[in-house]
Length: 220
Image (cartoon, rainbow, N blue to C red; front, side):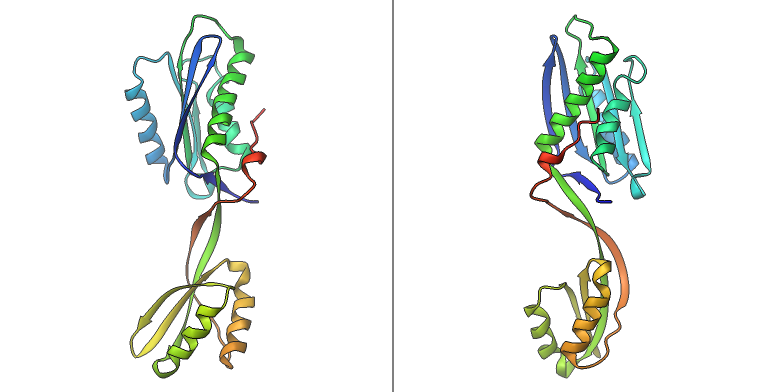
C-alpha cells in the first residue's frame, strides 16, 4: 500500500450557513509535534467556538487521534481523521477552527462541513508519496575507484549517496529495497567481480506524484 503525506503546509477557509471553518494543515514528524501544533492553534484562535483536530503520525502511522472539542460526539474529529486515513496519509495534523454563525447545522451537516473543510485543504496542499529507500555500501580499491565512480555516475538504476576515502574507498548507494538484487547484479557485471552490498539503513523519501490530486478521497 502506498503511503502519502502533505506536500506543503496550508490553510483554507470555507463558510457554511454563516459559520466559518478554517482548516490549518501541518506536516508533523512525531505525535509530540502534532500535539504542540494543536495547542498553538487553540492559543491563536482562543476566541473560536471550536478547535477540532485530528492527526496521523508516528512509526507506521500508529498514532491516530481526533477531538471534537465540544461539538457533538463523532461529528468533527472522527470525520476529519477519516479523510486522512482514506488518503493513506502519515505525519499530518489538521485543526479545523469554527466560528459559529448562528445557524445550527445538525449532526449530518457538521460531519459534511468538517469533512469538506479537510478534503478541500488537502486539495490545496497536494500529496507527496513517502517511499522507503535503503542505503547500501561496498568498498573499492583507491587505484580503481576513479574508473568505478565514472561508471556509477553514468547509470540510472540507483543514486550515488556518498564516497568516503580511506585505505579503501567506501561507496554508498541509495535505492528502493526491492531493487537490491538487480543492483548487485548490475554492479557485478559492470565491475567484473561479485558485489555483495552491505546494508546501511533505511529512510522515507518524499516524492511528488503527478496525478494524486485528482485521487483525493473525501472520507464520506
